[in-house]
Length: 317
Image (cartoon, rainbow, N blue to C red; front, side):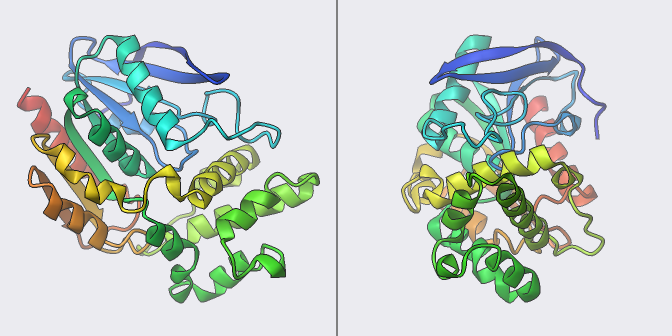
């Protein structure tokens, strides 16, 4: 991996609706522009993303999506209204940041939820995207959300039972994201905190398919848990604010944009049939499936494959 990025510019961008989105730029000011779209929703952009890029060849742009990281207002506050935090808003924020930074076209990198956001942005603004690199690919279909919140209980039955039982009995056969979203704005802080912990415990369980998996240390932070749980449940209960199957149906809009899809065979949170179908519909994309990797793996296989793709695109100009 490359060294940590030294930022040379940052700021808060007013994107409307009372939101300020934090951004940061590092690497070579004259290098190939690239924007990083983090997962979650709600994870925020961490410095480790920069280690995937050669700082001598890339101008690396980070942003914290609405409501998380250093962006304001913070979704961890139950009083913060999330009605202006949707996929449409996030896509518009990325485009506004591109214009703010004076970038004509840029490479888009995303993982997990960030892969769905990257694909949505590229389909809506294809003339502004030079290449797409996504890993732990998710297409944000209704069946994908149902798979994670219910069907994964067949893989981790004990943990899923605890997750299901974290909501009132009357809600256990309905939309679990919807039920948890209600608990996360309960008047009782203890109810909110328990719901955030239960949700994040399940998040850390259903990705644990690779030997030696370690819990994400960010889930030990109460503030992070609340922001993450509130934003993920908000997006999932609304089908990620995308028409069902939209990203597969819209793959033709990516024609002419080189793409690299990297996915773990052990990623049962987001089964490999999703990126496989996308690669069939997007002839300019290349899918690499790694047999020893799971969801969000940052082991040598996945990290090395992503770095190799970024290096190749930088070398090609």
